[in-house]
Image (tube, rainbow, N blue to C red):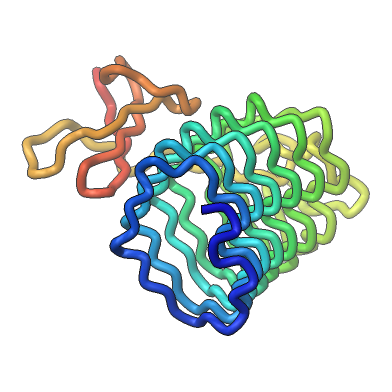
Amino acid sequence: MASMFRYCTKLSKLNLSNFDTRNVTDMKYMFSGCSTLEKLDLSSFNTANVTKMFGMFYGCSNLSELDLSKFDTKNVKSMPYMFYNCKQLANLNLSSFNTANVSNMYCMFSFCEKLTVLDLSNFNTKKVENMQYMFQYCKSLQTIYCNDTWTCAESEDMFFGCENLKGAVPYNKNKVDVSMANPKTGYFTKKKISGVTTITNSDASIQAIYSTDGRRLNELQRGLNIVRMSNGTTQKILRK
């Protein structure tokens, strides 16, 4: 499905509810350049086998919101330019993203000029080698929720042009690399653990279990678990 709808510049609506994406491995540039696309419902997408999301929404400059909370990204290795130049994007839900195998986030959110809040509290960036320009010119971005300290070999101008960003410290245009990607002395804001639930009988069943650092688990472990349910929701479950 790489480049499937690329440069469909007159496309404003798209119904993909009947797509069977179970065996798809490549979604690179899938919607790139769909500059008039107003809405995109991908809630039915099965992305469990996808390894490439390079530039998937590059230049979707008319999208105002995007809910990817049902995406399974455990096998994705590349996410550079994924939301590049999504200038009208104000709401972005990445709550289910498992980035444990991602190695490249170059320009991932660059020029997302309307974003004010990004919740990346579930991101695992231990394998990421390139974060250059990751948040470049996110002019309205005020808060990035993340409880971890990120490290990376390549991080030039990672926060360049994020003039309204404030975390543990206010934004400083002279400090824009990965050294500021932390919640203690940098631009990240700690997110308090909330919505912790106990296991109850319900119609929804557990589909996948992850540790807080993004590792796939075979069963609930003692402590906090991130659980994807069959009804599409993601829950934090505390096992004592």
